[in-house]
Image 1: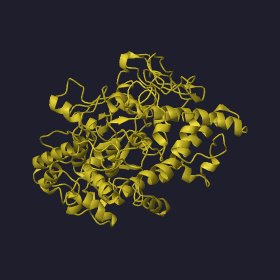
Image 2: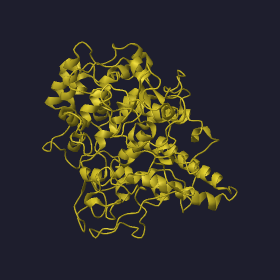
Image 3: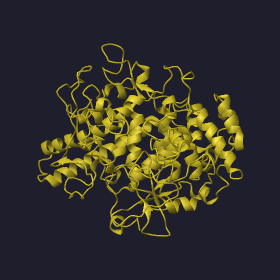
Image 4: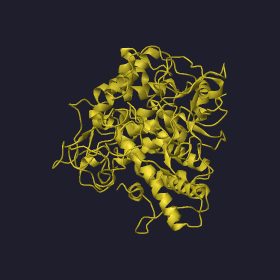
Length: 563
């Protein structure tokens, strides 16, 4: 069975959201990942038994088991599936701004850009199993929702749902690399980094003598990144964040050797540096990330509660469907169409262009091909993180968009998605439309409605007046179809709750609870996490040169030497 053997540590060739789907009728058959990250509709790929023996998966479950048990009473309508699908397609199209509708550029959240992509990094660290659109048969035709018990039985996760940085460490520096498989490269117990490719265009990004600012890569046609999860080379922001994690570990190795000389062997130093990196990351997820994107009072409630929704019924380790296919996708609404990236592609002045477009941030990756076929990131493209982390910046485009039901235009035409010529034109088009994919996926995987989750949490559901407030005529028309005003898709509901009740500045109560319960719960469940140490806090971790502990994401980047 796929649950046997060793959990996959290095995941390659997995498209954004590829997932494992098991066929219980034959324990030797399963989909783990296809060569292009996509699997044919309703098919099962045969793998040799010796391969299957080395792959283990973890489970998906429903955070609100009572709602799942009551299927379909707490879900989107089931009586006319084609009509519901068309309503969801209309809604997915209506929430994306057209170029003419793009909001006032001064209207943004108070959340710096880094938090959008820290969330994406966290998602890749927790899951590799949630949204292969072909395997779960997202089409605009017949789309019957899978019953919750069948979703639990068949949908599997290639990641341990813990904030343990599998996506960074891979199999570690002491493992013997498997034949014909990529592995995370180390120089001793430090991560190997990739060098920038010099270019005469623009200026060098300080520090100008530091060229180790790309991911390590294969010397091949695709510039394949040698990292624990190649999805972290999907766009340049998350790729540069992954570089920061590699460098934070390397700096931790140096710090341990200098400050804890009692740890003499490479094994001791590596394990200590890895622990300090993991614990700092986990602490920041709870105390900086969550308290920035969610309601701090809700995070405090969850963090101090004796019981946690994720594990109070003792179902073991799992990833909640409500989190992975709905609530945690709130970050999609925060994505900007363009960024103040660095002095070459940022504020007007001595730069090449006034902004870096989202399209460019997808192009300047291995998957995007690096324009002009550079073998690594060009020297004029490293991020200047000070433009991404400042909560007091005077520049509006250094902040994320509001968390609301208005999605940036580029997310209706995702670069690097839907490019497989073997797919039908209709499927290729759908794969490029993020909002539609989110809504159809939630329906297919039987996510409960927003109203049902609100009631389960004891929160007053959004009224029809609130759902209509600020909504375009197209959104209202879509919600009017198939009674979606009364049975609202959870992803849209979480965004609308943030928009109306928190003015788009952070998640509302329902969204905050789902996200906080999941992240705090996974940290608690992990026996190796910082909360399961003896009174660990950043004061017991690595220290900045001025002696201060790492207490913010900005501090994390400073210690890594990239800010």
